[in-house]
Length: 427
Image 1 (cartoon, one colour):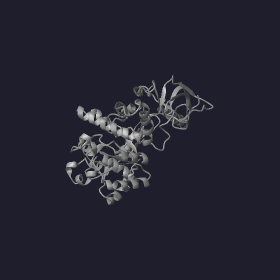
Image 2 (cartoon, rainbow, N blue to C red):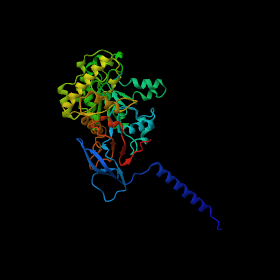
Image 3 (tube, rainbow, N blue to C red):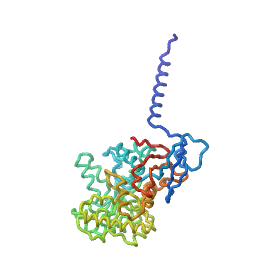
Image 4 (cartoon, rainbow, N blue to C red):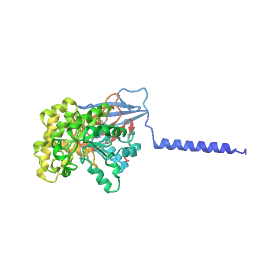
């Protein structure tokens, strides 16, 4: 038997290691078939469901049969809708169990998430597990812009006391205190250096800004000087960044619109009974003029209203539901762009959608379009998502029943596909 040289043995060993690594990579990141046909499905067109066959071709949706099909999946008469979105949640961060969180989002059919305030370093810590075909897609604002002592300055203090963050994670980390134009100009390069996907700002009872700004009694219940918001919007837009603004009451809502923000986070009065002083309900009622302004400017309004379900006082719950119903009806009347967000760290937009449904202020078709389409557009305005159209991403959910007739079908997803990848629902 001929002897083998040491160089030959080393070469075979190296080849074996390379093959093993390649096989492991293939097992770790399976590729979908190049072309999949989805037969016998009823596809949502924004108004109704159409029975037809669709194809995922290199992750893109098509309704024209390609020359070759690698795999056919029978949808068995299922109802196909675009994926759901979550336009306001801070739970994609390393203090959370990201694997469990991602699995829950995907189980609920939520593919797109917007985090409107986070530590920039936290984004880097989770980036390897998100924005992939078989995970959730997330964008981050990084640190938010507020006034001295304003919301959310109290949040880092709580986490620091638990020993999980340091003082460096407060000012200049989770938030930036901006009290003047000079301070905005000084801190703006550092804000941009974190490479935010958008800019998050805070208004809290801004009509009382002068009263609250230097009073520690109002710590965490104040925000930016409203006169600074237009300057922030101008700088952000020049940098190609959209601006989202936290609001509390109708005056904040109006100030945000007048400043030209792209998105308003929360609806007026979403936690109206929580402020340090009482307010008449009229402080939280959106005006007809402001609803028209929101429509004309194309401003997105993120709901975050399901917190009302935690209200234990029956009278306050009734008032909250009545306020939410009135404001929603007015915004719907003017065709304002609504997006679903929950701002619920341990939940997502499923309870939000079910709460809005319970108010009976919109029909199932309208609610489904808001959750599937407008919410996706609010999160990723440049992507071809939110519709089941030719050339859009091949991402969709299959439901067992028509959600226009029975909205509870949204809780019984039978198949999920993201960018042509059929997701494993057993994970």
